[in-house]
Image 1 (cartoon, rainbow, N blue to C red):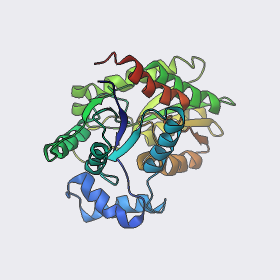
Image 2 (image 1 turned 60 degrees about the vertical axis):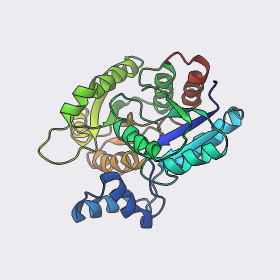
Image 3 (image 1 turned 90 degrees about the vertical axis):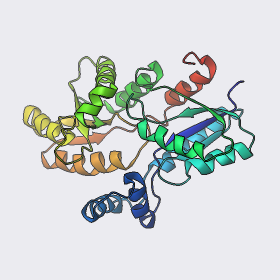
Image 4 (image 1 turned 180 degrees about the horizontal axis):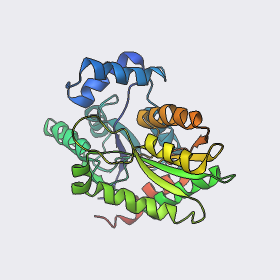
Length: 293
């Protein structure tokens, strides 16, 4: 059977401060200390409690419908509204039977939590559409082209490029292939700018005894400032997610930008690629080719 719809299955995020505590408890399975809860709530307070993820996905859906009206698109979130179970039931009600699923995380090894949540939801449903997942797409030519385009548009004058990706525990990142996939994609984009100095760093590492991937984005910013000096133009590139989310806007737009400016750097944050036409073309390409089945 041909695919009859597209499902975007994403992390999700709160859209008001009142939703933040329940969202954090959902993400952590309720295992969150009062101190950590207050810390994350403070991050969200910078943006009125609104994660930009849901809005970015809704804009992607608007553009998708305009370009591909014959392919209905749905959005189900793993940890927020609209919940994935609610979305799947709506798809059943609409007569959808065979959906292609996009998890907006390009790198292998980052999607385990999504699949575990989905397995639990599907076990409680009498009927669920057949779901075929788009594989990790970090080496897809159109994804890489989208990254190239957003960087090219920001390179109006000489700059240093800093690619920032969500960190994971080292053991998990190596076992799953996540670290290797990130490095491969980084080298592929870096090669498109051979005359520009480019660096890779990791953000959002948790504290504790378990080692996480390094160097941290903030540490790399300090190294760049020391090496190139003040007034250097720095492009911060969110490389781990195609849609804006809280980790991008807080870790880069607040923490990293504040640090970079304090060190005298001229900093610009490059947009995520999820609303680029190349990214939508990549998703549509899977409908046409189905070569990964």
